[in-house]
Length: 109
Image 1 (tube, rainbow, N blue to C red):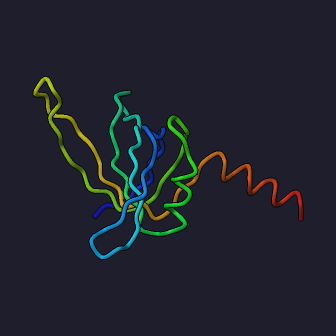
Image 2: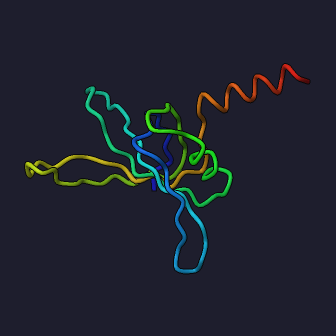
């Protein structure tokens, strides 16, 4: 396991799912830009209720940062080329929306 911090844009809409033991979780895809400028797909899963709820409140294209346990993967595209990807078990999500809410809360105090 690799502890990681990634930043990128949400790709599509997050989905709430339920496992075979009736425990809810949320899945999402994020596109992060690698150092060479190429995008890497990050497959995100959140078991924590607060983290999952934050993901569900975001929309396609929203910018976000995530921390969690990373696992590198490789997938093959339609042309047969190997492409890198990451799986991330998200522990925390931060979006511009969260920052705005925290600032508003601080001003209200």
